Length: 110
Length: 110
Image (cartoon, rainbow over all chains, first blue to last red; front, top):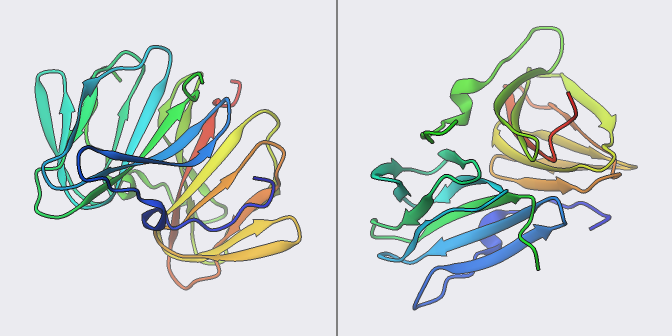
């Protein structure tokens, strides 16, 4: 990755029929930039990360951010940050595909 | 930041008349999520970060990503990643405001 280029996130989406699809745009020890792709009805259940902060940015579609005891409606362009230890998830409650940029710092251990 | 909420990045933009304006959305030791706001003609000159990876995501407007010896046209929704040591910058060559999400991992030392 020594020659940065323009990335159109939607071109890297990986939708899969049975569960949320993942794709990796960039990864280093410091940072993981990925995509979470949800067909209608798919979700990423509530979970948390120890020692990692997460940024969600909604690329297209709509649904819900899942939080501990709360659900927040998400729309294109919305950002949500889950600092380490804060439970979070995503559910596609819409009728079309939902694509969310998911950034983790630092990256998960391999 | 123990209670995540929906963030609409454009609502946090800080435009200033004489140079690029900055705003911080989130900061921890691991991660800085900020906004770089450019009036027409403003730029953030070519620079690099030692030991930090940077993600740019264009929220609104258009302009150029500046790279070492190259310039890449940027449009709303475009992403560009500058790994540590890779020179990068932004110039607003358009006729309207340009807002770019800028994520650094880890965050700069205070």
